[in-house]
Image (cartoon, rainbow, N blue to C red; front, side):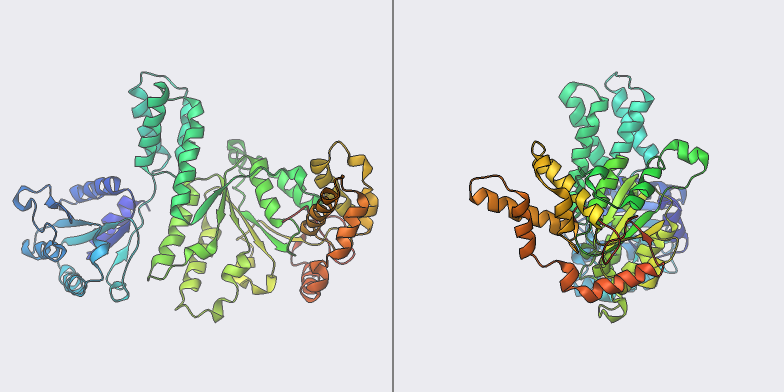
Length: 503
């Protein structure tokens, strides 16, 4: 259901107070005005500085007086159909007089064709008003809206862009507000007089800025390659087979968009590296979600942030959404004393995972499978669950080869990779990287290059996690051996299966 359809439904159902969180004030007011016109309703717009605007009989009324702004609703005849848009009204909801007046109005307006609409850049609803207000999300501009705006701006420059270039610019603009799109495109026109295909980079920089301002998602640079992963052959084969699954040709073939992966395993075995490598290999933007940022103190704000995250990710699709250590965010739901906020956020999130049709590929990582709710592991949330364990001897050799090829490409043959792999049982990819750094410190402190012996010396000083967290690893091994997940590696290690370069 579109925003206009849902808003019209709320008007007809006489929802008295509607709360619309959006930064696109001008655009949402245009949409409200269109819906009101179709329903033959008058529109009154109020803000704190100028009072009511647009209606000559009430011009400037209730200037700097939010309580008086609500009183105008009662002054209109009972049969008068109207929508009252109150800008930034969330700032006054903590006032006892405002809160009481809104409650009284909510009761009265159930029998009248009038609706109060609060337009705000954020959700800030006090506890005592949470049952009286209805939150309605306003989506970011869709493909056709952006294309229409881009073609309008392009026409003003007398420049003819190919339809393919226009579509590429439109795709790069998805996820931005209409105001930001106008701003970045006019900046491009001011720079070189026309719109050009190269303006995609300018748009992407604006997008990074926007995502940073949301403080929910991070636009993460993905420079790691599939070849940077040592081992994990089953996982890499699975990813390579799906490299073209986001293309139009795949849609014509009948393939659905890939949904995502859950990577379970020991810390430091390459799960996070895999998420970055997927985005780089598939040429998709990588968004990193810190689930902790979804939670806020005010009633309804956590759920609103979750919806905002989903909206932004879908607007940026196709993309990779990376959720690191999802077990820490949603582990032990039953024991969290937050009045059910975590459960509601989790419910919204997994429902979206199961029902989403947008090409958002989720890569979630987890270290503690016991902490994950069973609903998250159900088929349909992810395309596959892979177990990433400690690297085998053969894979450790690959990992040393990857790192030393990067650190000492001119001197690689001087290192005994077979000996290094043999002498480092139970070491994860992250621990191998750490002992290489320590070996470099040894060589640097003595004004010489580091050697195989330096690496082995560093390894002898490090106690791997496989020994300090032996019980957890044994549980994970048993869980994977029981067929609960697909093995990421073809090779068997001494204690576990799997492997990668670093986390």
